[in-house]
Image (cartoon, rainbow, N blue to C red; front, side, top):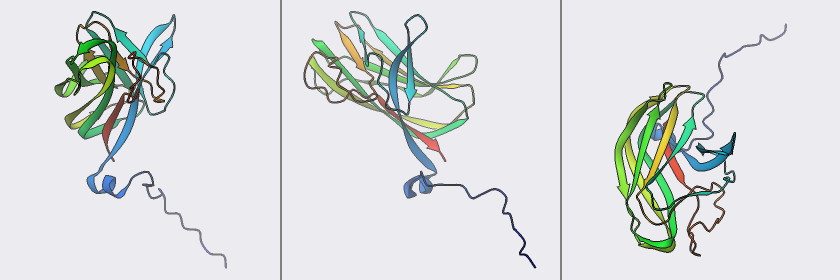
Length: 198
């Protein structure tokens, strides 16, 4: 008499990509990199990606004007974040710009393109004055449980003041584009780590 086949229905979830700390806290961190790309008639698009692609230019310069860059992550599935968001942002200049005050914000952008700020605005200055050199700004946001729906965006905003020549680096491969005019580039990766609920 043949044995009956038994089906258990839905398989057990695979937690292979999470470590014991992620499972204990219910939150896993995922790193995203800022990148610049071109589309259409050489239009500049700034995005967040998990892949270490080459950026088109790898940095953005603002000369004698305040500047802001918005890096967007388009969501095809819902995403819930909760906890500390960490950002490492390389900046530099070929000029002597001292210690410029930079501003960071993060948003949930709904399907109507309306921004909803998450956490507080964070400002930071480099630990060492910039003079033909580069520094990395390290900032954090404390974000309450936030659910982003399919079709929405997560946005990172990086803003710089009006100085002579200010450069944001955003090269996911960490390739040295020598964007600051000096020889001491620490990193060219603009990286944001999101606490994603498991």
